[in-house]
Image 1 (cartoon, helix red, strand yellow):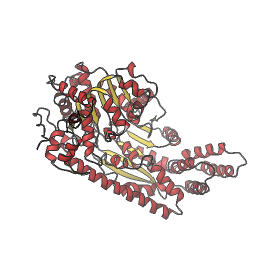
Image 2 (cartoon, rainbow, N blue to C red):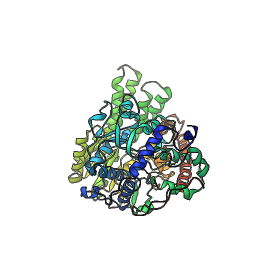
Image 3 (cartoon, helix red, strand yellow):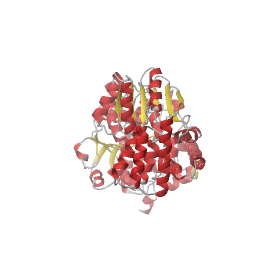
Image 4 (tube, rainbow, N blue to C red):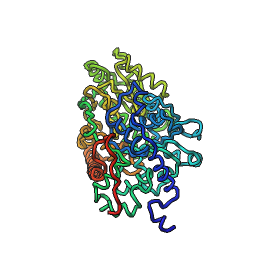
Amino acid sequence: MAAERDGAWDRWSDFELAFEARRLGRMDPPEVLMAPRALPNMTFYPHQIATAETVIRKMRGRAILADEVGLGKTIEAGLILKEYMIRGLVKKALLLVPASLALQWQRELWQKFLIPAAIVKKAPMWEAHDVVIASLDLAKREPHRSILLRQAFDFLLVDEAHKLKNPRTANHRFVRELTKKFCLLLTATPVQNDIRELYTLVSLLLPGHLGTEDEFRRHFVAGRREVKNAPALRGVLREVMIRNRRKDADIALPDRHVVTVPVRLTKEERRFYDAVSQFIVREYARRGMPPQFALLTLKRELVSSRDAVYKSLIRLYERLPKDAPLAAELAELARLGREIRTHSKAKTLVELLGNLDGKAVVFTEFHGTLFFLQKTLAEAGIPAVLYRGGYGQNKKDWMRELFEKKARVLLATDAGGEGLNLQFAHHLINYDLPWNPLKLEQRIGRIHRIGQTRDVFIYHFITEGTIEEAILKLLYEKLALFENAVGTLENVLERLPKGFSVERHIAEIFLRARSEKDALLRLENVVAALKKLEAEEARRAALAEAALPEEAIDANAAPPDRASFAE
């Protein structure tokens, strides 16, 4: 028995998985995909068709889809699932995706592949539906875990599968123990810190494919971030992993043009801005009422709109006893807000929209600003629809349709815009800049994505002489965030400590700083730290390039020879 434990399969469950994978490998592969013909309204890119054919015909439904960000891993996975369902090979499917993307997956499966799927959030309704979507964090907890481990799934998909890289985590153990016939692992970063992460991911799909862990280390690992025998490693990975790159996929997104739109405050607006700023700094230093979180929100609302911060001031005022010293100060700030007659930012927006051709998406972080802009645009005779997080999916779909067919402008919050695809618009206006750079990229991605046929124009409204101007110049321009490849920023921010909030950290810098000069110096330190992480991400990417399959996918080519571990 000792010899068996030292071999490729040191667990009985691993042997069973490997045996099943090899059994499936003897099935006759389909010669031509049926799903594209069943989906006449969908247009697939050649690399997406080739990926689906390769996974089904050669990898027998067990694969790591490791395309670079923006090439459509979701489309490839949906196409594979649809093909298996048409052929009667998949009935019961489980998709484990980030909670924030569950709705997007559900919508994409139905709208693009006519696959109805249910999202499980709390109640364990796993057996009531054939195709189920849930977060891994939910599925691995009881009572869900026990229910799922008792079931046999025809198809399992794990999005952001790099989170399974540690074999000692509950995430990894749970996915390994699930009974599954076909399995797709999706990740744009199959290697993050250590080349051995590849062994962990591949072993989830095909235990023994890379030999034992000792054999893998001996043949392929020169160090944590250094590969040896790279051609041989690419050879065995080509049997289980597909990595399409932008340079090979022949997908050229239209150019993006970034325009900074300066806004100068009126005398009344400047008085209000300065008064509220001083109030926030004083109260933060005193750490009395209102609570810290409210102060952070006020600071961000202040550069968005008078209405956003005004409503917050009123809410704070209403929570205090009328004789509280702070109540009188809040009342005075509210009075200064009411004195504002001209809203410079809103006026600039109306003027800009009047000069644009086609449809525009306007993003803001705050509901107060959203409703204010709806009223302002209506008064200017510009038809606009709202799209925010509080809407149900049916209303969101209706708003999107109204925008596409009738309205010129869509006003959206970041929460509402998650998963929103608006390639028919090519103007995007950031009415206020998010203090988390990733949110900005996600906004831009609503219109600058596969399917966009025109150049995209992005307008950043920047209020002169405010914190907004400082953040643009330091955080965005110094990090060259507008030029970075899509996905690079996301990988960098993933390396921040768990629970770390970029926007909260920036807000605290400006609250704690003794002066604006001090605040800018501290923000410089944040930029330096992010640039250091960016350099680490570049090294990680180089490691991945050295190890991962580099050839473009050819579904009709002969399968690569299995590398020998006896060399």
